[in-house]
Structures are given as C-alpha cells and as structure tokens.
Length: 70
Image (cartoon, rainbow, N blue to C red; front, side):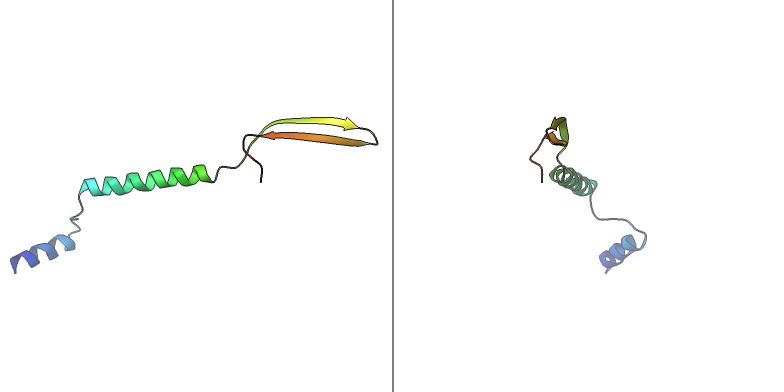
C-alpha cells in the first residue's frame, strides 16, 4: 500500500518517472525529423537567368535552376 501512496504522491507534485535520457532521445528525434522535413520541402532556386531579343518584337528568357523545376 505504501508504494501506491508514494507513486500517487510523485504524480501529485509533478515529479516525472521519465528519465532525462529518454526526454533527450525524443528531443533529438524530433529535431532530426524537423530538419529532414525542411530539406524535403526545399524548392528549386534560379541560379542564372538570360534574356535575348528575337525578331518580330519577341524575346526569349532562359532560366537555370539548381534542381528540376516543378
């Protein structure tokens, strides 16, 4: 009976039974997943752009991307 009282007392005062190592492991896992998701959502960036005039009042635009564009 005393063990139940002790456990209930720890919960009542907010003492956690989860170790710091477990919390750190969860925090590192969440951080890794956040970084991985951010890199997966990276959008292509224009690295070079060229303009040239064409006959008949037309022009051409060429753009180079660091990844395949959508």
